[in-house]
Structures are given as C-alpha cells and as structure tokens.
Length: 404
Image (tube, rainbow, N blue to C red; front, side):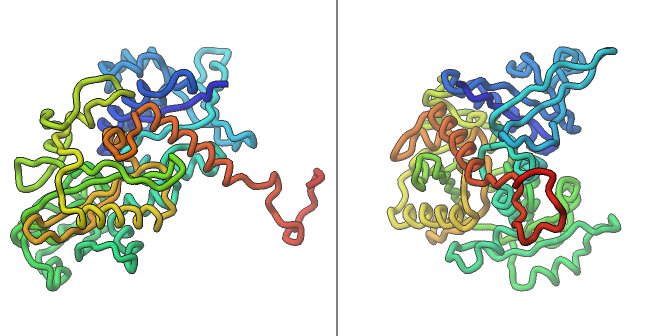
C-alpha cells in the first residue's frame, strides 16, 4: 500500500518563505506510485492548515479568503503504538469536525528556527511518528553555530576562532568596550551573524567596533546570540551534502556559489538569476534548477587535495552527530592561501540540495532521493521502537493491570 506522507512547510521562522518553496518542490517530486502525499502548512504565527489550495504556489502566503478554503488542524498528542501520526481537524458547526487525517511519515521541509532546529523532530520522536532528516539532537546541535564548534573540537575539522555575544536581558545595547574586551586577539575585519539562523540572514561585515555595535540590534531582533568571527579574505565558499540514505555514506557534488559582492547575503544567495551550470527549468524529479535560481558552479575545478579534505571533513561532521537525512556542510576558503574552514551546517538545505545529488559521482534524481529519505525515516523509526512497557521488571514500583 502507498505510504501517506505529510509534507510540512512554512513555520514560525525567518526562513518561512524559503521553506514553502522547498516543500512545494518536494511535494511535486514525490513518487505517486509509492506515496500519497499532502501538504501541512504552518503559518508564521503557528497555525496548521491542510487543503488542496496549498499545492498552488500562487496561494502563498494564504489570504483570509484562501484560508476559508483550508482546514485548520492540530496534531493528536497521543502516541500511536502503530507509529502513525494523526491530524485533528478543527470543529466546525454544531456537530464537530471531520475525521482525523492519518499519515505514515512526516517529510519535514522546514528551514531555520522552530522546525529545522530539533523542535518538530522532538515532537515526532515523542509521538512515535517517522520523520525525515536529522534526528532531534543532531538538528539542535547543527542549527546552533556555537554548539557546533564545541562539538567538533578535537575532531580535526578546522573552524575559525569566534566570540559569542548574548542579547542583553535588560534590552540595553551592547557596549563597544565590552565587545573589544571579548574579541581579544581577533582582528578586523570581522563577520557578525546570528548564531541560530541560516540562509545568510542577518550577516554583516564590520571593519571597526562601531560597525559591530551597529549590526547587533538587527541580529538580536531575530536571535538571542550573535557570533563574531574573522572575515576570510579572498573568500570562496564550497558546499557539499552528506547522506547515508542509499545504504552507505556518500558525499554529493560540490557547489561553489558565485558572488558579485564581497559578502554573500540572503538576497544574492536566493534571488539572483540563473547562470552557467545552474540547470534548466525542468520539472522536479528531473535534472532541474536549484533553490530560486542560485548562481553556482557545480563540481568546480579545485585541487584534488582540497576536495579530499572537504569531503572528509564533511563526513566527519556527519558521523560526529550521528548523521541521518542529507545535511549540507558549508566551508570557507581563502582562495590565495588555500586555507579551508568549516563554516556551518544546514540540517535541511534549500530544495533538500537535490541538485547536488543529481550531479554527484553516483547521481540520484530528486524523486529517487526523496523516496530514499522517506525510507530512511521509516527505518530509523523502526530502530527506535521499545517494548509496550519499557520499564525493567526490577524497576517497576507499581502493579500493572495487564501482563507485561
């Protein structure tokens, strides 16, 4: 029988709109011979909706009129011993709502806060429901740039030195003297960025203390921590995804994002026009464009030794956190010196990074890749199952009303 797959999109995140695009692409590309998918849209304020209108991109963000054609739902918080999820439609009228909507697995297309960072993963772990991507702990670690650096200490993966600045509890501005003291020997120019956001949101370049101070209010409006690192001169970025969904650890094609400015910001990363090697306009499931026509070079010419290091370090990061799913690992390089540093991880990359797998040494088209993600979700769920009563007999303090 076909597996019923709930594709979760949107969310209370600064990356809400990017998540919608990723989710719609995945919904269109899922293999209908294996799966019966439907969309679950999470609004900017946290309401959940289902309905046919969600499959049409022109309906985003849903207007009040469009919402009237949708059904608001909530998640049944009773864990199902059979491992299925249940969405409860909101009651309408005098005689209640429709029947629950059941699903076999959740395909999580969230980006950023409150979706990619372990929150939804933890919910589905608690409710015994299969879900795609990284597990709860790994999602939380890799979406926290500060914690990621700490976890990778001693692994041999190179990272830049950094300083963390917490948002003041009293709402006051962070003073220049305090920042200068925290920086120590880290020299200008610097990069100042949120510690928990992706898509290059809120990233700023600072050449002096005053510019650091000026960049913090906008970061603190979206995140409670700012991360300060040295700016990498002659900057080139390399990104590669890692997965084990095909039965062995594999790395994808490497991408080198193009840039016209000194710093790759959100608009350039996601809104720039297509270029050479960006792919065509074919339907998902075939070789197609990446996230919103990001300009990139796929499998660029780089020294073999550097490529081997990037792929090896990416695998190390993946293994260190008990990797599942297909996270994308991003690296920074000084083009002149050849130095490379691990920058950050994306537990759920834009478009699931499917274009990187299409161009991998062992290529996989989007539909095949999504099928493997769902299969891994069900397999991971199976591995985590416990007996109906997991309390050891010697640890039971109360009588059982059943034989266990």
